[in-house]
Image 1: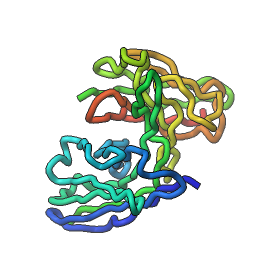
Image 2 (image 1 turned 90 degrees about the vertical axis):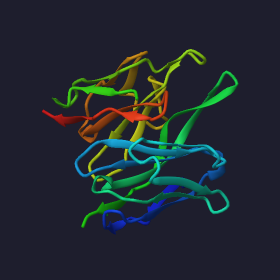
Image 3 (image 1 turned 135 degrees about the horizontal axis):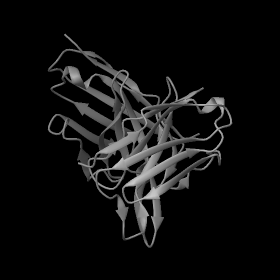
Length: 126
Length: 113
């Protein structure tokens, strides 16, 4: 079964740090780009970051750039999100998600997020 | 950044009737290289993660019932549920996959009338 399981969430004070993990199983993890997406309580979805299959290319939302770092360990089938200098507004459920590739015309593109974890809750509060 | 605007914010539809959700992007998300619009639709039920329904604006993800369809190109897109079922009650999001940062619409809540 294709599965993503997040962990590492919790309660942290403003300015603190957390490291989220996402364990992948049931598919060849090293062949897929991966994402982090968050959802504040009662709010919509916000993309946070994505990383290439080999881990060398990363992108971030402006709101987290310089504070969050996405990384992966393909040998351990695990995705990470290191979150530093946390703010109250970072409070959310954090989902990891698999990039859905679409291949055509000799190239492959990301075309959606087809597998999602259940999420891990991060609460930033004093 | 590409801004995604969904309408309406919510709608109530009778069982068996059609539900239509609109999504507009602030700039085109059309890839001329593959002749496709890089737009996805997701369904999120309460307490659950999102589920991919449609990718490349009109391609139905495997296992998604055929009452769900996507249409549109460039900047204007539509998700249609042809015959609303009770299990379709959810919030629906569009997302552009054309450029970083990837952005979602604000969501449309679909309820039973």
